[in-house]
Image 1 (cartoon, rainbow, N blue to C red):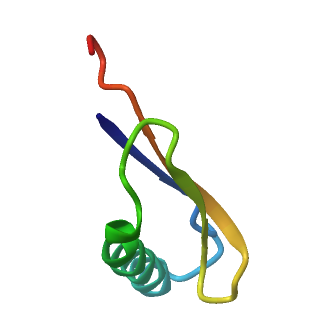
Image 2 (cartoon, rainbow, N blue to C red):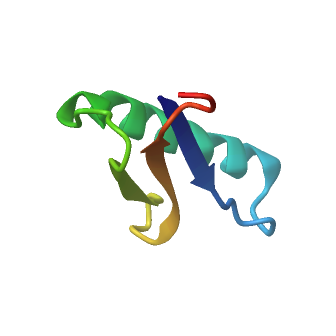
Length: 65
């Protein structure tokens, strides 16, 4: 399988806030992955701390699979 996570971080945020927000997103979604079978086709939108959609994650077939 191939796991893809894409997040757009607001360039206007100070570097410290960007790192904090991205860290929160990674902790939250990393902790929630056990709720999914993690098979090709699984995925979900990703929201920031203000509940704005900022990206998504998905599982696809591994190259050459």
